[in-house]
Length: 244
Ligand code: NAD
Image (cartoon, rainbow, N blue to C red; front, side):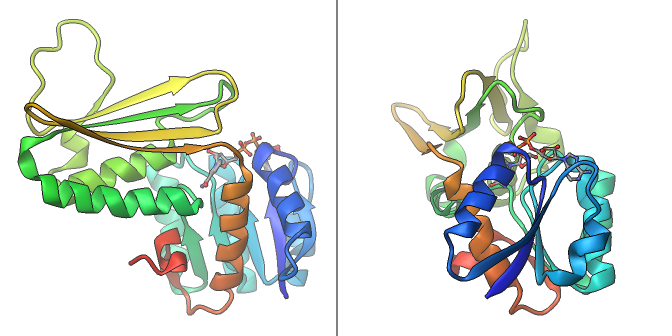
């Protein structure tokens, strides 16, 4: 039985994690923590902390986990480069599973994206399109950012240089190496992601659509169980699923 604390327990993902955790025979939720609660006061009871809160909250949460030698699962997105760097330093002290998306389908999409980009080669133009509910605060989504990282890595280009967020005005012709990124917002969309490979005379689109947050919650709970058996280090959901 893996004992977990949910950080961000009153949020949309927190609600799904508490519900799916209660239904999972291998999980015991020892606490749900949100704004105003004291994570430090309960962390000793847990084996792992699952963080789906707010980008500024992940760093202090990770520091607390490292101080108490607890495994950490990070689902929160939208971190600054500085926050990311500080959290990454803690990988030598505790197991950290950090994934922009915990669904099995999206992690398969990551794998397929890597393969398709390798197979199609440099003749295809690359664009990423994502859509989320109107309440999402960060853009592009963490998942879309991961997809762009995969594209840039396989193409061996600098993402910083080649990422093109949306287009407006007289932007000129598309360069061959740029990677387009487009964020749509509206309604109650849980999370849609498409990678477009546009070639001459043909177009391939890889699309994943999440219809329920339970898919992320169950993936994060699985990651927490897995993380508790691992040496300190940085892992992603592809490691948890054995896809890499
Ligand atoms: P939400 O706004 O509904 O919930 C966030 C919760 O965190 C809120 O209840 C808020 O009060 C709480 N919170 C804020 N500060 C806190 C603090 N100091 N301590 C504890 N709790 C605090 O958001 P959401 O839709 O549940 O998403 C949460 C995060 O998870 C976002 O960054 C989102 O992008 C990300 N997300 C990731 C995945 C994934 O698979 N990795 C899936 C869905 C959402």
